[in-house]
Image 1 (cartoon, rainbow, N blue to C red):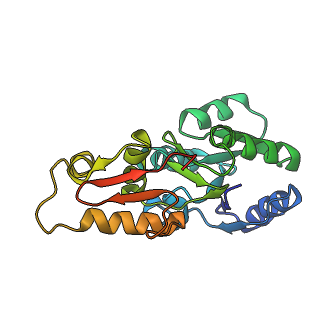
Image 2 (cartoon, rainbow, N blue to C red; image 1 turned 45 degrees about the vertical axis):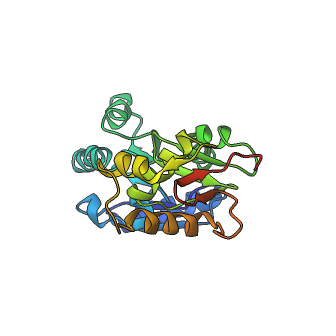
Image 3 (cartoon, one colour; image 1 turned 60 degrees about the vertical axis):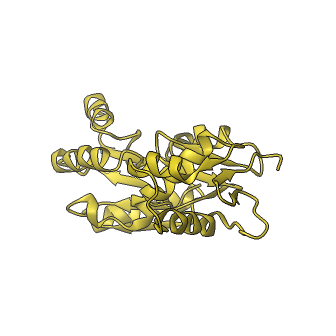
Length: 226
């Protein structure tokens, strides 16, 4: 499971949600006030390394606005909204505004756990044991069951290599995909991005498991059997 961050403007609600998550078996839980904008969210959230549980509060208007903005700015965000009361219309609205799932207040730990695990099921199902998987819809990557906190640029690089897995992708092809231009002489930005991605994959350039550099050509993402 991804780490979880609870966002609520009410301190008591933050404590209650964190307690419900702990009771449901989730250990990596942080809780803080809902920020005014997504720009101030922690990096691990912005880059797909955490799942958000958003309290809509007793007056959900501003929280729903925040949810809509978050979905627009961070399309890969995994977000579960907590709605006060059983009103079906509010649940529908929350889903329409960008929530991936909705649970009612007070949260039932078992239901909350089931929702959070179901949100990540497509990615887990797509990944053979010991392999690497991408969820393009949510911009998530998982390697050996470990969620990677990738920047947008790192995810896009990995996505290009993943689409052509097992084949060499030239530096010019990668640069065209990522920047809309071929590599300029002496431009090492692509190689630096590969280095950062390798570091997060836990890869070794001297004995690569994931990304192999092909001298004079480019890079390839090794197939699972390699």
